Amino acid sequence: MDYTHLNAFIKQSLPDARYAHCISTAEQTATLLKRFGKQKELQEAYLVGLWHDVARHWSNDKLLEYAQQHALEPLAEEKEDPMLLHGAVAATMLKAMDPTVANRCLVAIRWHTLGSSRMGLLGCCLYIADYIEPLRAHVTKMFRQNLLALDTVEQMCLRLITQHASYLASKGKKMAQTTRELKQFLLDGGEFSW
Image 1 (cartoon, rainbow, N blue to C red):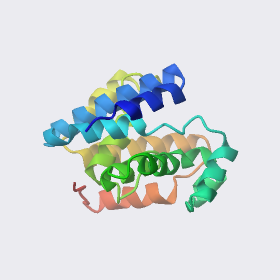
Image 2: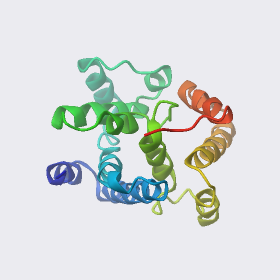
Image 3: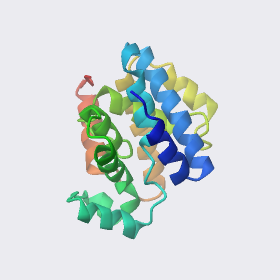
Image 4: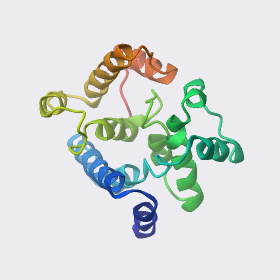
């Protein structure tokens, strides 16, 4: 797969710091996939990591307008905070630019912010990578190391959700419904498949 045109589009669409985050997320996603036995799928890891934040700097109005024009149905949390729509918008944009992209890539990008029990192994790796990639200043080196020392992506994902829930509670907010469902899926022993 040649993603040169997508990379060029992303580079021109994003500020330098966000572009660097996307490159770092792509590398971290690939590292996780490789660790969990998906050596042949690394191009998809790079694609989802590179593309996941393509609409992250759009205004709330632009995100809502795009969602309406493309018949996306925002979740309650996305209506309340339209920035959360950037994953759904990015997935829709990617499908329009390259209809041959595997559905698992679109699902991974769609759920990279809130998480979902339907996001699959690729989505889980992106979800984790987006949070812990080395350029993220809000994540300590110790937390990153401890997270990566866990045995499964499911354990890592659950640890992230727990960390995020604590952060939200400190701000007087609650987790999104899909995140709560994801947490329950993991607590019930759910495993991500390809």
